[in-house]
Length: 509
Image 1 (cartoon, rainbow, N blue to C red):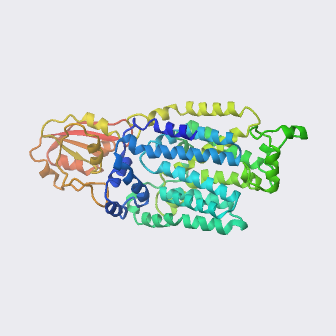
Image 2: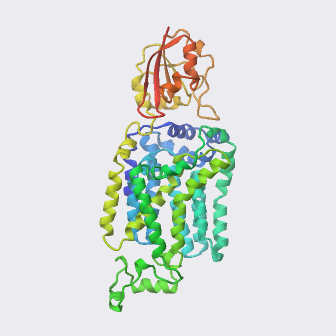
Image 3: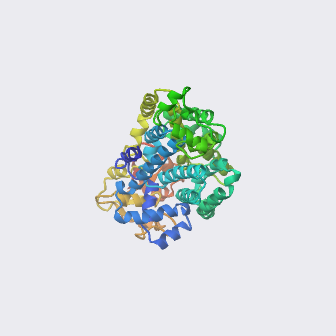
């Protein structure tokens, strides 16, 4: 199932073109180690671990498929942990259903074919909950070490992935407070370092607007990638949390209800481990002796707590991210919360697996209905403009003639046009160097646009945003500079979605 999840995420990899964030990955990872460090001191410092990984990865190439392959693998890894965590909390069937639900989420298709660290973060978060369950199940040094490593990976993949960790604190108990908090503290060292770096780079995210509690109404769509399937799965997730809480044993040594043997010794003897709602004598014996079995959380009397832990995994990140936005600086961006998608799928899987019968039929119905409710979103993320920054489209619009010039409204767009250009481009009259700025993704440019355009009769101007954003007002200063240099608008076209790209042709008056 983890392989299928990875394949599902990878299916749209070669369709949607790279967007600005993915091109920033190429720009950062293509630099020397000292160059990446210099960049991290000014912008995107919290992405440095990912950039270091991609620095090694792109030595084999920068094709779209190759750039996005690690994210698809990350989705597969996350699905594997969901399968085993579902098995530990309830049954193998619950884990498999959770992974199937996870695989059909449009958000998984998007971030699984996205050359950024969000799929890595989802995998690391799933790993941390899986490792915590093992450590709680049997408190051993090596298991706490694995948990500490998992927390460190969470902190290294994306700074705001750490917002899932408070949910794990619900499992703190006197008997394990020292090893658990010690492992978490050591694992959080990268978060402390990257957090300090990120706090000093707040100017780099000044574009993020302040948000209010109304964003929570859109959270199901964000986590699932589609409104219809998101609402359905959130309802299932709440049911799954309630059923996990109600079915969990209340005391140490109790057998979970889904493994409780039916009345009658003869039937108990015939029960099989693979049959839902029954338990073998061996499993019952393990539960009574405290030996970890397939439902370790329940057998240690903590199944009810895990219901709250999983709900915390799902709902705490958006709440805490908005709190940070209100108290420190605006940081609420939907994609920062992709780490909640595995929790949504896991809780939905638990709800279906907890049905008294027809679990397989119900699972098929949920998966098919989830697909039906999100068909359009799946199609959209697999279109050429699936990342809303269609540079190949812009290149097709540009019909360059000899001596035509090109001016970029945002200098970092140059990276994408140089990546996709496969024919003669207009002359880049403002460019002063081949490498991007050491402290950002833009390029050093001439400031005297009028002088640079002297002798040119046609100039193409490309900017990120709508036509109005560049033609009205001063949002894109380069457009005003071209007009001031003696040019008038001849044509302007905008790609299908916002913010999208605008391509405009200006001719000499």
